[in-house]
Amino acid sequence: MVLLSPGVAGAEPGVPVPPNDLLTDTGKGDVSEADRDFVVKVRLAGLWEMPAGELAQDRSNSRRIKSIGRDIADQHQELDELVRAAAKKLDVALPDDPNKDQQGWLDEMREAEGTEFDQIYIDRLRAAHGKIFPAIATIRASTRNDTVRKLAQRANQFVMTHMTLLESSSIVDFAALPTAPPPAPAAASGAGATTQVVPAANLSTPGPSMNLSLLVVIAVAGLGVAVFVTTRLVRNLGSGRHRRATPS
Image 1 (spheres, rainbow, N blue to C red):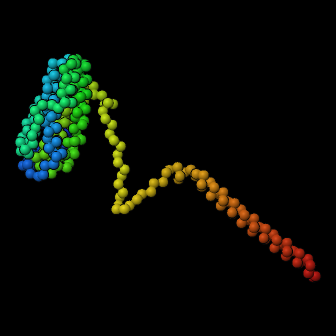
Image 2 (image 1 turned 45 degrees about the horizontal axis):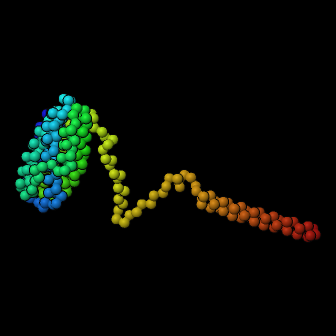
């Protein structure tokens, strides 16, 4: 727990811990609709993950799952305090209940127990953290507001810790997680620059048009040689007849 808790975690050798104390938290800067939506979603995450952790104590038979559920629920208590303080500073209204999807996940857990509960709990929480993880990165990189920026940085540390805890269960179905989209084509290196890509096949194997061109070149060259040889032969024959006709 000491190693995984965002508040007291020590850095691995060579892996820095983000210095949150270097960020200001005054509420200065424009607050976008995306910023407000982010604050609400952080609150919603705690509203269902805290009761899910409590369910893990009653519905699971695994000491490991119970421990994961307890740790995540406790850490969401801390994150909830941070998000409520940020919302008050930014005048963002927060919900008091999970949304419809989250209520449905909690209902699934209430109807399961033992290993079935364990799989549902791990799969639902891991999928949810995988969705909010890139959303946090977008806000952290783009927000103009310093309170939102600091909340995003802190939330990112919690989410990374929770993903690690969930994956430590060894029952995450990674094959069921969404596949990352293919990367976008690389941009041109300069303004107006274009790059012509030549297929490798064109460099190593001549196509039909290359074969035809080669045959034409060979035919023309052969014709030229034949004309040259014929002309020289005719000239030589003519010179021989002229010498025989002239008396010595």
